[in-house]
Length: 276
Image: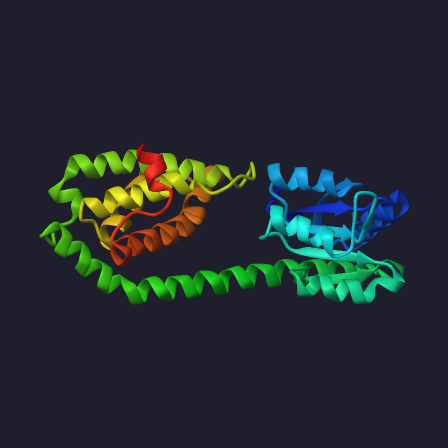
């Protein structure tokens, strides 16, 4: 997303300059929402942008010089499965557009019948639906962790032979974990501005070390909060807000890895690579 909190980043993939100009003009007319539009004419260009930049929504023509139909949606989904897609169709492409929705697009617009209000509403709804789906997924994940947290806390206590918090019984190990968790936070947040894979190896490594030290969910929260305080405590700049907001997602994922460590009796698939 751009620096203006009220501005959304829109990637327009359209090979007809006249149609692209029309979309930009209609967005200007629908001035309730602001869009920072990046226009490309080929799917290959779009995919490169999606790999390297944060995009809020893709407006995708179904007929491009280097791709067409369902394949264009699949290509975007493979690179950026969390970005909502609205497809642009011709009069004869409605059946294909419905097929695009079946494989992950949020909505479609017919080029011959786009109006400013309809365009704004469609884009806004697509972004909202994608966000709501992610929130539902996170809520389901959180409920799963809550259900397992009691079990995993007990396992952590049995493993360590003590109910004393890790930071109190092994301050040196805890300090080392905080240092590496801060690096993990940096990598996790950096992927927002430069699209890249999550730092799975570092995540698995910390979950493994915490598990081997007998740490439970409480210790993970201690680790997360201690790291967060060091990188964002008392500050209100954009970077610090990103640490707090994205850090909540990281904490949830780390909780899942720790729970899995105790349930499966060992590290995740990336931990061996991290420790080799």
